[in-house]
Length: 342
Ligand SMILES: *Cc1c(COP(=O)(O)O)cnc(C)c1O
Image (cartoon, rainbow, N blue to C red; front, side, top):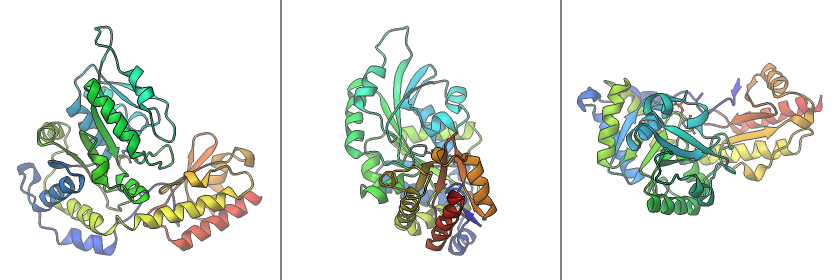
C-alpha cells in the first residue's frame, strides 16, 4: 500500500519507538516531565523565542495562539484558504469569540496592499482588527512557501497599525528546507508560531507554540481549560525530539519526490499542473480535461493499492512523506499512466 492521502499517516520508525520507550517522564501538569521540558527548551531555542509549550495538536496550537492574542469581538485577518478557516471546526468563533476576515490570496500569500484596507478604523461600528494569521507552508495552496520579504512587509504594517501576528507553521520545516530560510528567521516576525510534529516530521502526535514568556503563560492557562494539560507526555515529546534531530533535513527527499511526481503528471493526457509550483511535499493537480471525476481516478488508483484524496470538484491531492520511497513514486507514476490512458 502506498498512502499519499496526507503526511499525517506516517508511523513511528523503530528508532523513534526506542526513543519513546526509554524517555524519562513525569507529570507535565506539575511541570515535571523532563522530556517535555527538554523539547520545549529546544523548540524555543530553534525558533528564537523565550518559551515554547507543548500542545496535543496543530488545531489546539492555532486555537490557543489566537485565544492568547485576541479578545472576544476582535477580528483576525487571514488568507481565505487557511487551515484555520476550513479545518478547525470554527473553534476560533466558538472558543475565542473572534470573527475571521478572509482575504483571497495567491499561492497562500496575501499582500500588505490587500491587508491595509481590511484593517478596521477605530469606530464603534466595527470589530477591532487584532491579529494577522499567516500559514507557512500553505496546505490548500499546495505546500507553497511564503516569501520572507512579504512577511517582513506585513510585519511592518502590523506594527504600524498595532496588530499582532501568528504563523501557522504546521509545515514550517518544509518551508525552511525548500527556501533555505531558517525556521528561526521566519519566526522572528511573528508573536506566536506553531509547529507540528505529526506531519512531515513523522512523529505520532504533538505540536508546539513558541512565543514570549507572558504569552506562553496565558496559553498555559487556556491549555488547561480546553483539557490540554497532560501528564507523562514525555513519551510523546521523545518522538518529537527524535524527529527534530533526524527528520528535518530528509524533508528535501520528500520535496524532490513530490517534484518528480509533478513532472511526470504534467506530461500525462488530461492532467493540468505547474510542476515548478510544487515547492515542497504537496502535489495538487487538476483532472477536468481527463473527463473523469477526481473520485473516479482516486478509486482506480485505490484498486492499485495507491491512496490519495479528491481535492474539490476537479482536483486531486497527493502528499509525500517519509513513508514514501523513490520506488513508490515510480509505481505511482506507472499506475497514473495506466489510469489516464484508459
Ligand atoms: C495539519 C495542519 C494543522 C493541524 O491540524 P491537526 O489536525 O490538528 O493536526 C494546522 N495547520 C495546517 C496548515 C495543517 O496542515
